[in-house]
Structure formats: C-alpha cells, structure tokens
Image (cartoon, rainbow, N blue to C red; front, side, top):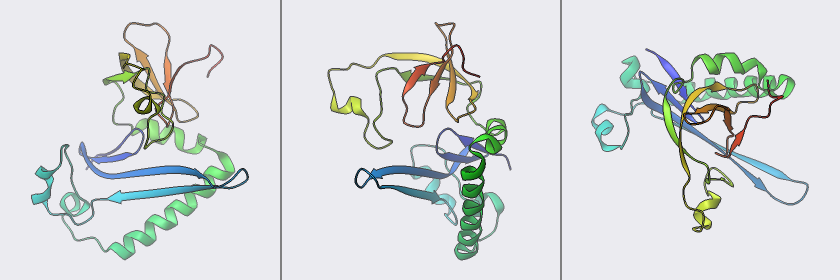
Length: 178
C-alpha cells in the first residue's frame, strides 16, 4: 500500500484518508502555553462506514486485512511520538523535511487558496469573524514544503512563489528565502 501525507494534517493510504491530527496552542497566561494534540485513526472500522463520509476514507483493518490491537498500536505511536519530538527539539524540522516532501500527496496538484483567509488558529479563521473581507481566490500549484515546513505554492498568474503556514496564512516568498 502507498501511504502519503496530505498537508497539513492528514495521512492517506492508497489515496484514502486513514488518519488526521490537530494541534491547538492555548495561552494560559503570559508565561504559560499549553499545546493540545489530537490524533484520529481509522483503526478497525468496517468498510460499510466508508460511504457515510464526504471524502474517500479507509481503515488499517481494511488496508492490512487484519484486526489491529489498539493498546499495542497506542504504545507504538507514543514511543514514536516521543522519539520524534526529541529529534525535533534537538534538530528542528530538518531531519523530517526530505521524508515528508517525498511523501506529500498534493505535489503537482493545483488547488484554490483564499488570500484573505488569514487564520488565527486551525479552528477559528479570522475572516469568518470579519465578513467585510470577501474571498480573494487564486489557483496555485503545490510544489513542496520549504525548510520550515511551510507549503510552497506557485500561483498560476504570478511569477513569484508563495508560502502557506500551518495556520493557512499565505505570504510571498522573500527573495533571500532558501
């Protein structure tokens, strides 16, 4: 089976969503911040549920043709998360960059982006709170991730590349950007 990442938070197997993640930062006060992390995984879901969702989905049980033990999988996920967080804290995004870029599902696809969608968080986009900002849509081809994990897009009507950060904010690439 072919697994890929769909920027920024989905995992696909054979082009169907099997997992999704989210991270939300909460500011407790001026000195404390808490990160809420969630992982959803279609583990032992039967195929009769697949048509009840508005996008192609699958489960590990369906793709691997075997029942997965939730406790064993949770232990493996936590161990992997601990190891990868330690690597990230020590070395940043760089050790993950090439692998993620090679497994990014949307490279080469042209998608629609809203230049006025300046997201405050993954849950509540600012422009929903500001109805005076009409959508400003552009078509852009996905070319990969930069060294910081931002999505690189090439708008079809512009010569300059743009970046999309994890919050969905779109900005032009500075000329000194690697």
